[in-house]
Image 1: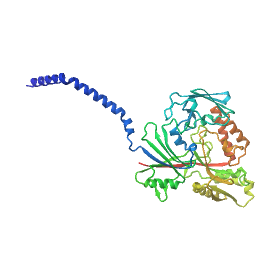
Image 2: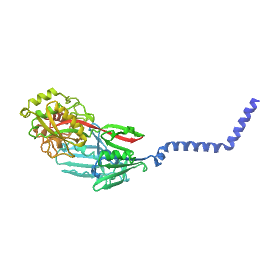
Image 3: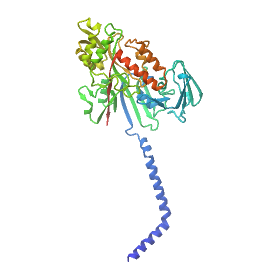
Image 4: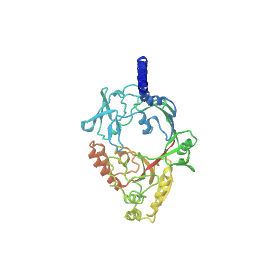
Length: 452
């Protein structure tokens, strides 16, 4: 009986396959192919579904199209080079370069098959940097030659600036969909992914942090960035429903005390160094820094120039100053931006420990006349700081005039060898901190608030 049933099933299957086998295997093959096609293309089709792909991002600041934050520009386009976190230069749109004529000529070779977001191919004709004292030659579609009047070693960092065609068309992951202006300033900027038009980011710019925080509280933004505090009025953002708070450190901005080195009191570097030694070791609003470079900078001599709060040494320096000993009480005026008011108060409290009375005055911008100014400056990834400290630089707000520092800054700009530059900027840090035209405080913490 069992044998009979097995034979019956075998005959039935044999006849079934004989009649329907071709169709069965055809549909099986089609099914397998369709399965793998759908599996491989799922991500592509999912990205085309316009659900949950829009972001409304709020930021504080006034920007023109040419001065938009680097974080935004990097999404829209790229430069000939790019900079690593430590400031070292690596190829980007250019696959390589040669430095000729003792550092005065740079020859870049472009990558093939790079396209702009409008579909056009990148050629040398699209390289449109506008540098003064630099002539440009484009011998073929893949080569750009820059001829400098003088040696300028930060040039490789300078060409990391993103390249755009007319209409803010770039080579990045996103393309500009809409730009709304208020006069010359950008009111909002909408970016759409070059691969997925439904993936959209709209950046809205606000004049104050209060206006930015209010926007989020009212539900008009899905994310706000660059906040100096995770609190808004009497509320903590983390208490908002479905809200995530992320803390970061802005290493492109260094909060700094600038001393007027030509002031009749602060012209004595003993007093400037005394004030520096009295400054607290830590600040609640940022990551402490004693030098004017990013912590990961390839020229930063980590730990070599750290100075701890030392009231005893500060008093010794103060007593050695003829200016300080000629008056019963030393008084200084500290002008500060409103956002650094709390920091100014901490510093004034510390200076009181060494007998210095501090008058704090709030200003809304860099004052033309000051004894001490509490503000910040943008820290470039390239170590060149000629414009801040050279005696002939218009933006040398501390009025520093030191021939040795001037020479180091000049040499740092004229040396293309990395090891030699590292030694130059090590000496620069040493002499700058000894001269103390400024006290470097901290890289500020910033907060990003977003909806989960």
